[in-house]
Length: 529
Image: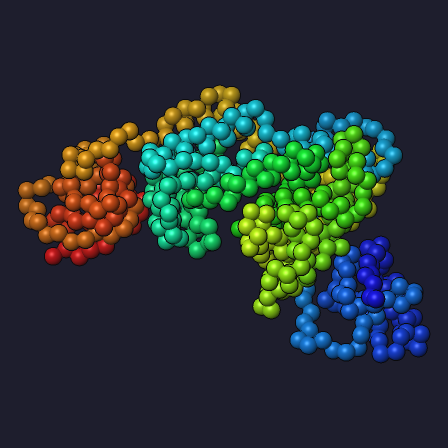
């Protein structure tokens, strides 16, 4: 049976070179049909990464490999994860810890994890600001879509978000919608959001499996990054499932927030960046606590605060998913509380790399949550580097920031938290949210609409306009139009005339979406006669 070899990081390249030389001189001691694997290969590094299963070891611990050439074997260089902290990073949670002498690094790490989670947990002002911004976004959505209901999901609903975490919202509509209709509806919503002045820029991700409209609220409204999807029932249902794990696994929240903070710092904590999504992190932590692959005492998982075991759990998580987990064949399954095989799921596709992470969605067993993490090699390397950094951190009174080797707060993150406190305490956030433009209630008949310009522009004169109709385009023009009110289709402008464009008929050769005022969208297409 082949064995896995971990190359100690304390070995120097010169020592490795001498070891290889001496081993080659005694080649007759190696099994026949094998050659020594050169540990100084240019495509390798001195990282503690498991060697392939085809690699075996001699009694002296020297790695050897079968001489039979592998078909289409390619050597790839894994991009090293930057572990160095950027300039200006600080560790404010350390101020709450005193100078205490600890019996072990894991005990010290436990206290630092508790202090870190307490620091990044939302304050009263942050909870208030986030809830008020979500409520105002909901007002805009429901006025544009009166039958819509709004729900939160993801980290926001579970209180597992970082201070600069996104807001995930689901807009539920009673109608069945295919992908194309959802995209069109999100474009309509994007126009309403921009007109409301709650944001200046929106982006509709139309090609994703789940289309979303993404935007960031204005600075005076907290600069919150928000994503809104339509009829995301699966995401909403996952909240109750994860909430059960939160209630039954006391260590769950601590480990999730540490891993999220670490991957976010090195830009690998988002599916949009091809890293590991927040949902994926949650499922990995859940599976680790369910399976207990490091065979830790049960009380370490069920009573982590009493046992002061958070340090051991974090180290075990990093070691398991950094070194031990079989990415080639295994599927993480929290529904079964164990591991499945890719072959049994039909996920062992030949056109996909074997080392891709596979995570079964507990609400949809056919959905692979990990398939979006195309940079899983870097994520795995990050787990290895974090484990090595924490393991090698010295235990002494002079060295008192073990968690600081992988976590830190940037000056921008600290300044933003201070800004949130300031705008809440001063009342400026409430004033800014009151200034959000919300259309009045009720539906005004189209033929009775008579918009008046409020932006300083006079309407177009009407005396010499002939009736030369043509069809306008689909756009998002914002402004008042001088032509007589058009005979609009269902996508026509409303009583405020910030028109969502639409296919309609206009007078005098003017497009439905062209006119005076602010125009943030495409003008309608058409050719006057």
